[in-house]
Image (tube, rainbow, N blue to C red; front, side, top):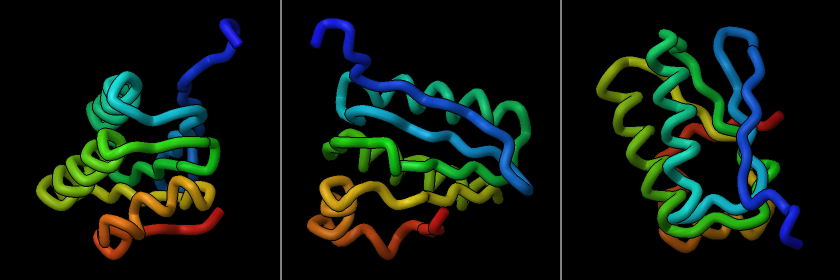
Length: 108
């Protein structure tokens, strides 16, 4: 397991915007990496950022707080941040906290 990567992001152009696909565990140790990537994309004037949670195997409250912050930034700055749902273990974080309705989820 020492060679296993705990977290990584891949960025790809998407019609009308850009997609960030997250892999691994999104937690207190790794949220700064996703935050930095989102900040970089926003600085490049992308007005649609799709955060794809499909590659995650774990997300804790730190990941949720980061996504809530970005949702708030997006509303304030007039950009769109959409989420692609993660696996059931990740989606459960949204369900348990009652925050699923806050976000714009898209499939695919």
